[in-house]
Every structure is written in structure tokens, then in C-alpha cells.
Length: 100
Image (tube, rainbow, N blue to C red; front, side):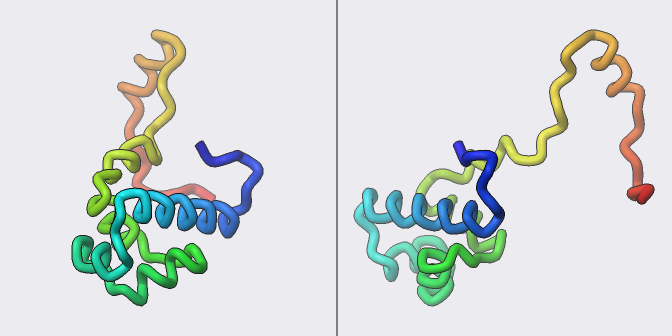
């Protein structure tokens, strides 16, 4: 779990460190990971060194080490805590645009 007090930059660096550790644990060189994932070796190096990566490439890399399912919990709507909330959320339409 990522600590709540981290900034986005700190979080991306932490994820890059974790990924590199997983890659090395599996025993893949950067060149092997690049071939398996379809991500260029230079993009992989930049990610591991700085944390900078596109979402598409992050998903490709995650798939290559069988960790794609970990993204499933992101951006889920909050769970209802009561029957009234559940009924209200079922009848509410999703807005098509923001108000502010």
C-alpha cells in the first residue's frame, strides 16, 4: 500500500523502485523485459530511473510480470454503507460533465 502522505512524484518513484525489484526478482534483464512487454528499453530505463512512464507502457510492463490485475481497484466508486445509499446510487445518473 502506498502511504497517503507521499506526493505524486514520490509515488511514481516508489512504484518504479517496486517494479525494478519485481523485474530483478523474476530474473529479467531490461532487454528481456522490453521484448516481453513491447516497451522500448529506453522507456523502461527512464521509468526505473525517474518514475516517468506513460500509462499504456505501465500497463504493458505490469502485464509482462503478471501484475495487471492490481489496477482493478483504481477509480472504483465508493461502496454504499447503507441500504439507503445503495438505492440512491442505483437511481442516480452519472453526470456527463463537471459543474465547476
